[in-house]
Amino acid sequence: MSFAPRVPVVYGGGGIGAPDTFCKLTTVEAAQEVYDAWCRITGPSGIDTSAIYGLGTSEVLISKMNLHGSFVDTKCYPISPGAHSYDNIKKAVNESVKKLEGIQIRVFYLHAPDRTVAFKETLRAINELHGEGKFEQFGLSNFRSYEVAEIVTIARANGWIQPTVYEGVYSPIDRVVETELLPCLQRYNIKFAAYSPLAGGLLVGHQFSGAEPKIVVEDNSHWDTRLPFGAFFSSRYGHVLPAVHELKKFVDTKGINLNQASVRWLQHHGALTPNHDFIIFGGSKASHVEQTLKYCLEGPLPGDVVEAFERCYKAIKADIPNYHHDPAWYKPEVHGV
Image (cartoon, rainbow, N blue to C red; front, side, top):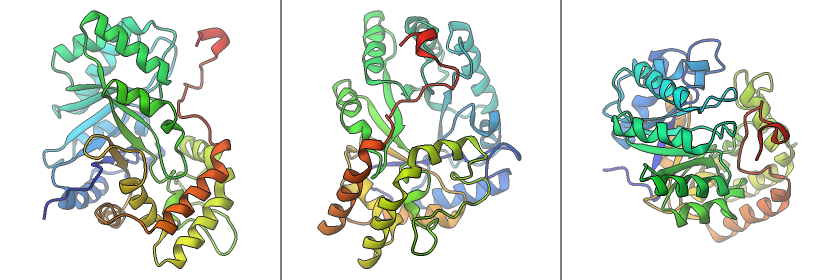
């Protein structure tokens, strides 16, 4: 039977990287086992990664894997001012191509904005690289909606490649993109790729311990605050634990686990456009991805469970940070807006 969820999925490779790089899948063999399980269900699919994942080692490990004919999406993060200059973008893309050892890059994303470089300069390099066949599509991630519109306008005015994908944070408890970003993307026919669809694993539900809204933190997990990702997820979602815990208790009474309910919500009740947008699901064990993909094929949720998700989100949405993300070095008063 073919795998055809309502909203397509891609495997998130952020956990693939060398030892001591904040990753869980630190060998080719470990990553291969998980991705084999993924492809047994989906067929040839795709892996989402970035030049920054695994401190620069994720692309290298992925290049050693049998991807079963899958594509790779990758990104360039501006780790310092000027990272998105004409020369540096050329260098970054060519380094990714070299690390991936001939694997075709489907989407090349600008991972976050570098406002120290004029967008026109960056886009000129992107257009030339696309013309050289270095990647198939151009994407954006973590940009503000007005920057998306500006980039499309510049690209159109110069006859250059336009962005066709935007990767942004989205989950049943994090829907900030719905208000302004998604309408902007729809206007320009840009697909939305949802990252962190289970809120850093919070909506898997297994981390809750006992009757209190307390997280059980595993080493090297999304909630390990010693790590960059842990600090990000703890600051973004730490305040929502009581509301999510109440949601978990309710869905448990319906014979549905929180992970299952969250995946079904994403497939049937969120703002993602079927057969257009897509969801990036991770997983550090074969059993994790098998379970997630199984849930992707299940039907809509009962009405009272959907209402429970709405109650949860209404209780927390005022305190959810915005969807865009700036590099740590960025200061508006110095680098502009």
